[in-house]
Every structure is written in structure tokens, then in C-alpha cells.
Amino acid sequence: MKLKMKKIMALIAVGLVSGLLVARPAAAAEMNFAVQAIIPGNQIDKSQTYFDLRMKPGQKQDIEVELRNDTKKRCYCRNSS
Image (tube, rainbow, N blue to C red; front, top):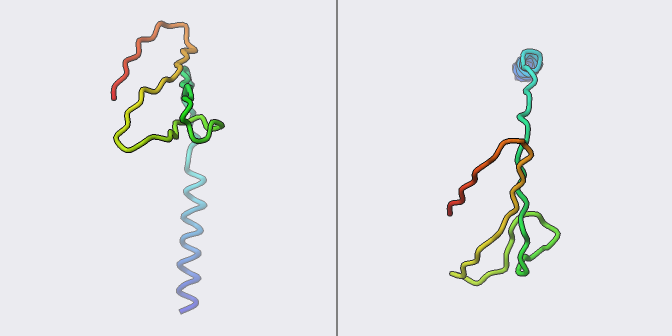
């Protein structure tokens, strides 16, 4: 039983090592746009950069974000909810 387990573990190790040798590094896409939350007064933790708002059930609130275009091209943005 121990010998069978050792063989299985050896096969798994060989598979992992061969997978690492065959894998190609991926190139990350450039980040040409940035979004920053405009934190409202009812944010629970104002040090966070995401929205975590203290609200009552059924309450609605408009939120604001700032978009930054780091390209030289004009960009048109559309919001949806």
C-alpha cells in the first residue's frame, strides 16, 4: 500500500514539474484606464477604496467614481445599473 502511494505521489510530482517546464509566461495587458471611488459620508471604513456603505434596507444612493484615461485617444463611457 505504501509503495503504491509513493508511485502516485511521484507521478503527481513529475506532472507538476513537467507542467511548469512547458508553461509559457503570460504578458499582462497595459492598464490604460483607472477608476477611483469618490467615497461618500456614509462609508463604513473611509480608508477603503471600494464602496462599503452604511444604508437602511431598501435605501438607494447614487455613487460617484472618477475615471482617468491615460491614453492620447478620446474615450466615451456609458454607465448602466
